[in-house]
Length: 241
Image (cartoon, rainbow, N blue to C red; front, side):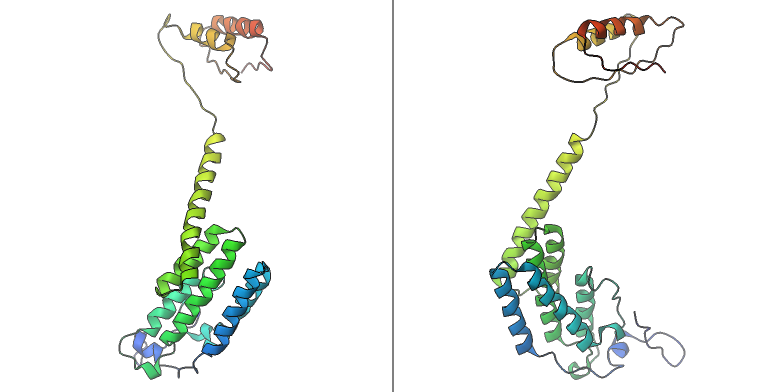
């Protein structure tokens, strides 16, 4: 994370001054990335998704080195974990006001290439059954540069569906882990013990734990519930607190 340049009075410079502080790097070789992209898609077509990811990570590292990414005045700690954040910052630098195009540290073409790298990484994550990671990268790619090809846009749609399905499954599993609790309360003679006797004796196929708060000195309800459970012959354990 580089320190922004300061003005003569010690203040931070503007985005324009930061963008023009260092001469722009040479443009990235478009033909090289096009060939790498074809290689990545070829590996994916053959089912070699891990190998495709290796090529992508190598391209991300090379992109950072060629752009001298870590010298830019942007947050780069999430470059590999969540590169879309870095991509948005690069897009802001590429379109900074008051900076001549020839003096920009980041060129619009470089932002487009980075979005394409991000899109390909999202496609590989999707193929590796990681829809949440795929959705993060694919959404970021489209946010950085909206004019993605059909494969990226299709993968984005699939990632959204799979991520939503995975989230719903997690919610369903979490619901099944919950233990429902019913509190029976009422005045003397309201039928609380009668209801519990029925629940304990009925053949409903459910396992029920009863926690009784016996206030009186003589445990009348406790004895009634114990007798009902014994009659049903389904009590596994009785604990008196």
